[in-house]
Image 1 (cartoon, rainbow, N blue to C red):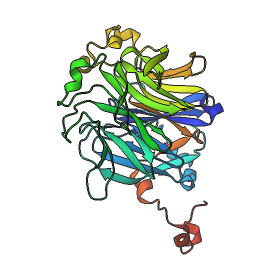
Image 2 (image 1 turned 45 degrees about the vertical axis):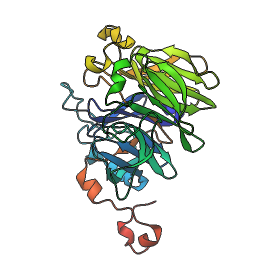
Image 3 (image 1 turned 60 degrees about the vertical axis):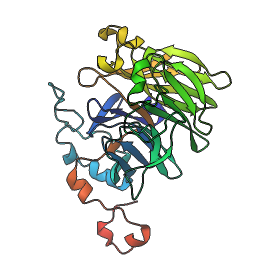
Image 4 (image 1 turned 30 degrees about the vertical axis):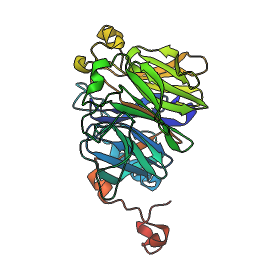
Length: 365
């Protein structure tokens, strides 16, 4: 499926501290793990992506000229895609190099936010706007401050680091953040926890008005093909909201806590979590199911027919997914954040500056 669509999936799991790239490699699924401190929502654009972590917003740029270095046989003397800390039976070392990489994302910007519990984020006007859950607002990066608030729900009266309503998801429409989801309408620290089973709301950002109420831990609103989709996470649901009536219309209910949503063509890629944390998820319908009946991974649903068309299930090391994002135009990318030598000795310069770099030091563009 990934091969035919020409895509890779970025999957973040803050519980395991990993960003996982699901890639196609010679007819099988390849899982490319990279470690981050509490990776949350990535925001993807052509040739770059940003990702919120425990206290930073990281920005990675694609430098295709680095791919030949990644494809050198000595780079694959051992398998770097297995997580040795969580896999008691690691995959044997590669005998042959894998599929050639077609993209290489290297770190370009690291912005310190402090501990603000970043959730989802999106590119808007050449910068990233992110959900600042701890302060119950939308915010963006600042050259001077840890974050610059840009909007808050009307029922939030102050910038208090108390996670009052658990603002968590955003949808961009016509180049601006238009809709957000929250787990409650409270102005008290952690007030959303009192009614988490059906206190979820969908809010229209320009007006501040609620479009829908009574949602079960709503997450991941997305404007796609003229319709507003979201995840009814507390029931494992995926559906859409009728903007005229505010009614949630279910498409399918899945075997896990749904969180993380992205699209390609008629397909929705949906993250599922087992939700082991009883303190947070106790009393939520999906948590009432036996643990063996709850899955963690990425499920693929046809949005026209509502049929399940594929899935990948994680076992043991990963129990929770936060975000799923389609990375279009690349079927075998790499994210480099731990290879200190490669990061230290790779330089991206403007074209005019490259003219003064000796030719033997330049990589082909």
